[in-house]
Length: 191
Picture 1 (cartoon, helix red, strand yellow):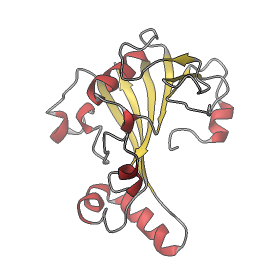
Picture 2 (cartoon, rainbow, N blue to C red):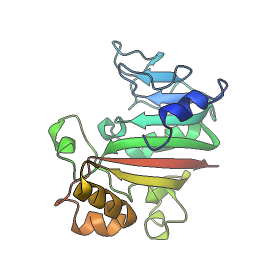
Picture 3 (cartoon, helix red, strand yellow):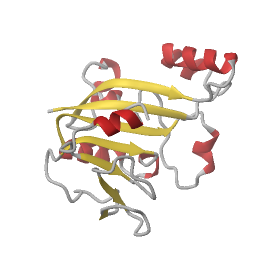
């Protein structure tokens, strides 16, 4: 995940408030609060993530990790607004989802949304072309976007480097020739 490596997670102060959204059978950080709809998961809180509000206070979390969950949810504008509500000012939302060119996106019948490098531009005031549509009353600053895929071999490393250096052109012209498996976003809550 682009947001925090395993070493960075271990270095977090125990007082850090982290929410793991749709945790399933694994928690990334031992001190996090985990939420999932599945009662067989290891979640601390069992809740349908499509139902808002979530059972958390305004500004409760420093970090929210949404790893392979947002592509399964219904109203992303509503969900993104809810995640903004429970983040502290300056809190980070770390999202990993299948890239729109990934065959895995189309494999899972529960996937409802595809993502590109510009999917969160509607929330970032510095992204003027899409922010002007601003479907929500919440703002995020887009800190990082990384297209993920195989880096085995020289050609794969070249594609990885090129796709991340020129995301929009790559997505427009080459994404279906050289598919990316995932896309990672690190967003900062602007309040």
